[in-house]
Image (cartoon, rainbow, N blue to C red):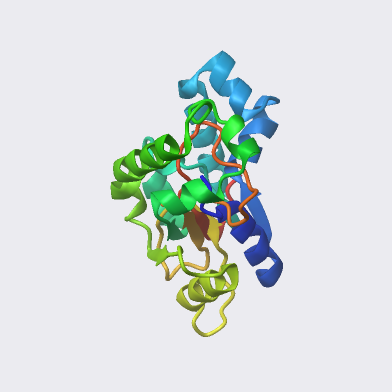
Length: 221
């Protein structure tokens, strides 16, 4: 969350001319409810099952696309392995303080796990989340330290990695993958990572988790 994966996915989508997909949005479309409500009324297990369904659909689809995953998606089941098998994943790594500073009041309020946290408590929470998820996010094919980079600089690094000679691969958020594939996924903030968002006003994962990134690979939906 707060890493910029969703915004970056949209920008890469425009540059590459492929569709950008957000796994949280896909889950909401399938279930007909917001991520927050799914967590509140159906529980996290149901949300993860829906995420898994989205990953399976995207992995089976041959369409080139950019996928921004939820922060926890790469850490559940064999999601990371599935994503890696069909595309190149990118981890948009940011420090806990940098992520916390990028979260808008709205983004914090809509996440149950972030509500009521003071500024330093939020930084501590982010630091713990990053530490827990780093082993999964670090498996991404490309890891970019984004604290001091602009969106354009991050995109340039992703594109250089994915398509050094202009072959036209896709980038999607979330996990790791094979850079040799025509697909590529980008994980924002250790996510995968799953997601991640570049704009300071972009929301965080609804479960209050850290985004893992944007990935460019076959469509995941």
